[in-house]
Image (cartoon, rainbow, N blue to C red):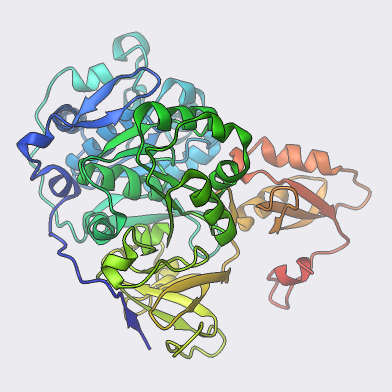
Length: 535
């Protein structure tokens, strides 16, 4: 049987993302600080941000970007990310956000697949951006380097070239429910990365769904260390914080000392993290050197948080620790432990081993993957495990140019099959217990085994290979491990295998352990039997 969210439905306006976030901004909010650059101390007010977004949209429109045109963003978290991202959407374009750690070939692959007509980047990433742009045939004028020397000096426009003209945002028209706003890339339940087509309505819906549960308000200061290019940072931080008129302290990368300094110096009240950060917060002695008393709420996502670890962080920092669950295909939040469980549901917080309840306007099923039978809510305790299915306005439109993968993921009734095994309690609180899918989650990043296996097989000294996720005893984290079959009479060491992969992929995708075996176990159809490798 299906079970609905226990929270009341929320209104989801039929508007664009820009109109939803900024269309009804109050006069008194225009002077509020939207973005803080802790390195320089520079701040951006809501009035300045809206003006910059309009100017960026006008500049992009003058350069040929219109409804449906795709623009890539290759950038770490910087205040200008918000301007560019929302400028693209304001112009009617589609933003494809690219992992800032990607190599040139990986960037080119996403640009080509998404059909991007332009790429926006920053100087530290210019080398790989130029290589990718050249590979896909983008002209110099279509590679924007925000902090570069400018079009006259380098051929690449910079922020001043874009915003200096002060052009007005164009008048555009599209259907928010079908027009693709963003194209993040996800491996879905299996295989190589695919473009996840998320509409304006998907993004609007998810901010509306989580707003009554987040407990975020205009007086909150939120530290933004999770990358905006990842759907978690894009929705839960960037869009949700702007909608709530909060202030975002923007960090380009995680550095523990800077993270702690920023919380202390800017009186940060809310933090959104991935579990590896929780390990440091629970155990590192340096934590005691900082005044973190302004923090009242911390939420973990992107990978499972251990209950004991989460409680240790909550006790040490004297804050409210929460957990959420989602995936790119769900815009991304589908489940959350709310900031005020007693007030909303009349009960205490569930254990942090749970992911909380389905967000408003959504419903779930737990389905036995072997029989296809729906698992009912139990009268007590936890149900039998089954695959979690999710239905709601946050479910993606589909995978870009991949009808088969879309049909394999979203059924005829509109339920998205997550590939995650879950249990549920009598109240509808969900516990993720395992993964049907083969993705490896390394520090919150998705690592698709199929991509690494294909790469390994390009090495002349490797006859066959398989990759699985294993738990590293020292850190307790999942890491990619390669099982390698050498070519006859060929010599290759574990170190050489690791170096070969590392030279061709982003750091989080690196193989971190290697085992040489005689043969890769496979089924009659040729599918790798990963369960045999895990024995």
